[in-house]
Image 1: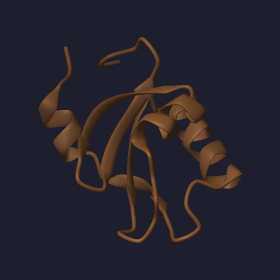
Image 2: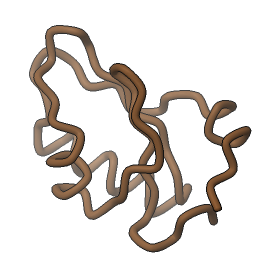
Image 3: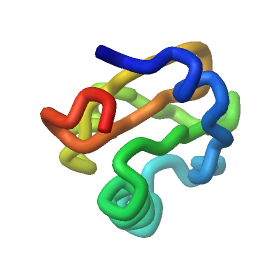
Image 4: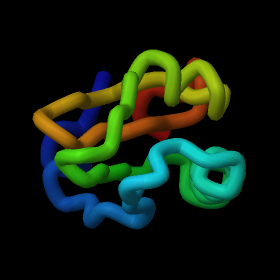
Length: 80
C-alpha cells in the first residue's frame, strides 16, 4: 500500500528543465531512485514530458502523478 503522507511530504529532488529528459536527467533519476527508493520529479511548463515514457526509460514505476509532478519508485517496491 502506498503511504500518501510520505508522498505528500516528499520534496522534489529532480527538476526537468526546458531541454526535457536528457540522458543526464535519466541517469540522475536512476541514481536517486536506487539510493532513496522513492523520489519526486517536477518539470517546467514548457518541457514536453511523457510520464509513462519517463518511468519506462528509468526502470521505475509511477506512484503518483499530479500536474507537472511525478513520484517514482523502484519497480515492484510499492512503498519501501
